[in-house]
Length: 359
Image (cartoon, rainbow, N blue to C red):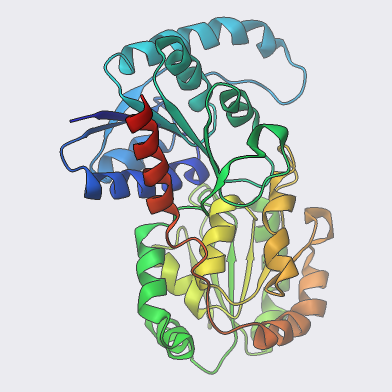
């Protein structure tokens, strides 16, 4: 029986792939102990326990992307987080990290204790935590080819899919056309009306929401149905006609399948889930961070299934003017989804098993 530690809290982009791998690990090693590392305020506190896994906390290490007085306290915060990680990793046999502020202290603690570490990088442009961790271990995996010195020899695995997305792909692969019609009907929309799915992540996007509100009357007058995930952090607009606003989409797989056009941020997880089930997307990358969202969607653009627009250019007038062209490009896009990421969790588990055997 082995003890496997997963590090990757903070955002769904780190948590969901980690959960997919943890579930796959549990399938092959039901007696192993699996523990997640997180902080007391992260999204992992609601997701991880609900998925049936143990969550242990370490202090949060917040490092501003721009020079700030908080940098003065970062070394002390990091030392505290590393010490807390050392306690959690005391009897660990393997650490599997997915990036984010939780991972860096865990990588350092594992290196000190000589615990084998596997790192998966979801984004096309790696974050600082995974770049740091990549200097400490040979066991590296990436969702897509990464132009980074640290990950130049990494195993290309794809990005682990959530179970509902993977199951929806398997159920749809024999007849994606029928699956898309059925999903649209399950969501309560007319199967013959074009469906626009707008989302800005679990917390929503104020910028995207505001422009959609301004364009709403024009879009509805053209017979376009809209499902709008406004985000849990934003007020819920009034539903009207074929406009269905929700705080969060529970039937995410159906929303991907049913939609003719998706407007969303281009986080790694969103791009992976869209690639599996979606038809056509307009990605509006988050204008902050290290620019990874611009890189994540490039392969989808190259395959004719998406386009990228800067947030400053995404306006109500742009949407009104270009919606017909977006729908036409959707109609010309492949009807089928993609199985590119379907076996990602299995590949990462296999690499982890290899790391354990080499210990």
